[in-house]
Image (cartoon, rainbow, N blue to C red; front, side, top):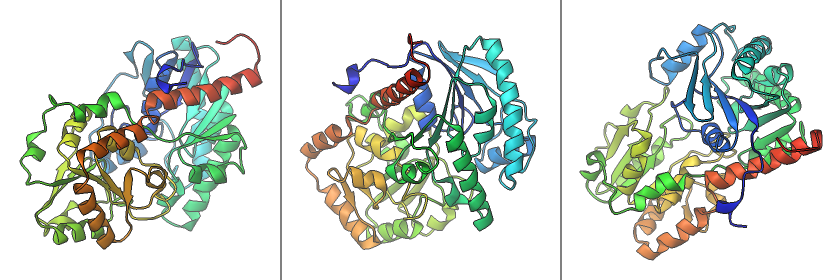
Length: 403
């Protein structure tokens, strides 16, 4: 059956989701999924819980100011945002005990918000590796853990890596079902929970497809750059940017404009490109403007170093590039390998430059194959895939009439 007409298998349920970031800071697997679930269910999105010190530090790492907003806010017909008080203990990145205590505190806070909203027998959903405690202590009808990144790859040392893996295993065991965005993430999690399902990232074609429309105007920041424009759309962070590859590309082709559009995260120093005048760091842009920037890119790139993070995680931007019809060149990360029929893959700087040259020479009719390849990977389809898994789990736990 065409994914665009598959009905939602889960309806009239109440879902409480522990968000990985404040609402609107990033567009994540979690936020896209919750917006999709809210088509037929009520959703409470819980912003990060912790100490005031921890939350201020997170805002500083994201290079933004924390805004004063309502504790509980309705932002749509079926979507609420809860901003818990900063009364958690500090030290979650150092001590597993802190995560356990904070989980119990958050579970108690959520019970109060649940009563306030009239949520009945809710589903609890978490993408947080250290959420095993709240998953255990909150009385949910179904508990879901979703692995969207290999968090242990970002550990400072081996001790912290072991702690993260232990907490992740705990979250898996506390959950009734587990989702993972790649097979590479899912496989080790099955040792802790055999009910682990793979559900890849996706794109919003109704958003990124605007890059295909003649009436979409390319912003001046990218329109003024000399052609061709080799583009990157997404956060610039030290885990997912091969600086040497980009510098090699810039020096091999001084006639190319390399445009990097997105957040410049803590730990990434854009000054490394100071001597490459054809690399343009355009910074963060409004989400609504992404398709316009995408339209101005002749080839899109994923210049990812091959590390524990990129070799296990998915790449949201790949689906968005393809939904905008752009040719794509990537290093050999999982998403690129899965879509290798329409993605050029190269792992050395020299081969990467050659792949971009080939992508620039692609005929216009090659765009149709890219759009067809990404068509099954819409958030509409992905949310319905997850909803069907949840529906089956609910029927197994509690057979009877659907909610």
